[in-house]
Image (cartoon, rainbow, N blue to C red; front, top):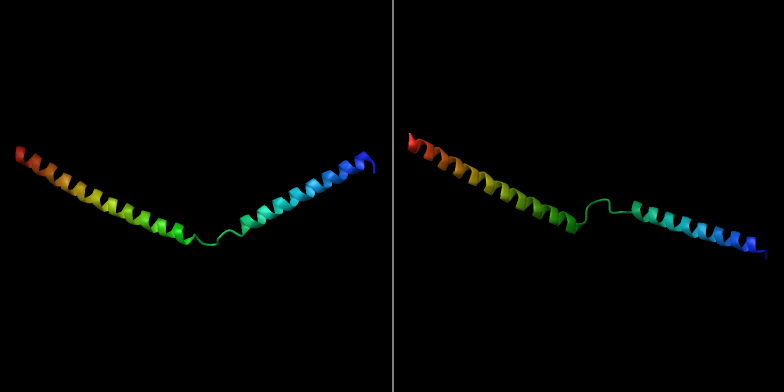
Length: 77
């Protein structure tokens, strides 16, 4: 065989391997889960609960601080 023939076959094989790898990667990416995983969903619910709890605590603290500020202003009158 001629050297250029061997190089051409090698290049064709390399391109075929690359095309198959890209096709495989695209296929795997398209097969991703249609819905979030159980763990991810559980973590999202836990984070939402913590967020709601901290928001409620902030509202209570704000109400207490506002009441104390209002009392301090009325005491100086």
